[in-house]
Length: 320
Image 1 (cartoon, rainbow, N blue to C red):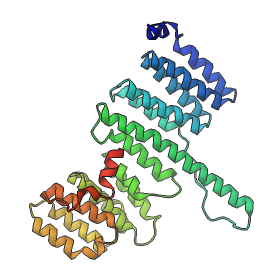
Image 2 (cartoon, helix red, strand yellow; image 1 turned 30 degrees about the vertical axis):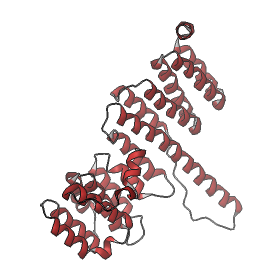
Image 3 (spheres, rainbow, N blue to C red; image 1 turned 45 degrees about the vertical axis):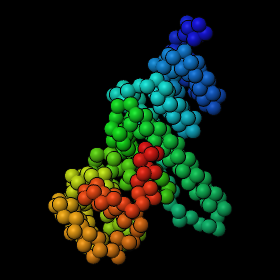
Image 4 (cartoon, rainbow, N blue to C red; image 1 turned 90 degrees about the horizontal axis):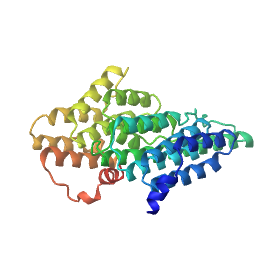
């Protein structure tokens, strides 16, 4: 009875949307945030999820449009939480709203780290800019990771909707002050766009330390293969060869080339020989061996000695 009374008493949602927009425009973004939360909660309690979603979507957009990233991100995350409570399917309408909110997250060029350390104001400004960039990335990451989990649970692929992974990978690469290529690559291989991933890797090769380019390529190919995605692994390598002006001829690149050919055959002994021959270059990064163990299990049924100790794979899958 209480729920039915609440359902009847709640006014048309557009009244709230118009009123709260004015509050933000008058400069009280934080006060509006609290009102967006409390008002939307009343609609959720009354199980009027569609109207709650309207309020939260409007609020996130208005706050982000006014540069209030923390407030906008809070409402964007609450929007996804409400999708989950409503058991809303992963459909075009909801995805369009997520796309819209994503586009409103600011993209601000991070200033170079080369500053005059003798100038206190210069140092303070760079530290402030980097702190703001990290905050933007953390907010966007929380929002899109929640959206990925929702999409996986309510009708999308089991690893989440590919476009959401692509959004997160792109933002992490372009906006994060400290590049975490493992994290970025994990999302790119789930984005079903190996051509774009190849372009990003080519760009990274021009920015990374000497000798890291082959690691980035090998890591990306092995991630695709650990998911059983032979097709995109080959497309990625072909695209890199097309786009790169020069491609490292390191032992690691040779290993990856031979590995792609080997996995097209039912040849576990050849796979094992290849790992043994190129052990020294594969050992440059522990993750490569972890991925190769997953590949051996997926393609040849070789059980890992202690699969519960996978450094990245299982943890990442649970976190979505």
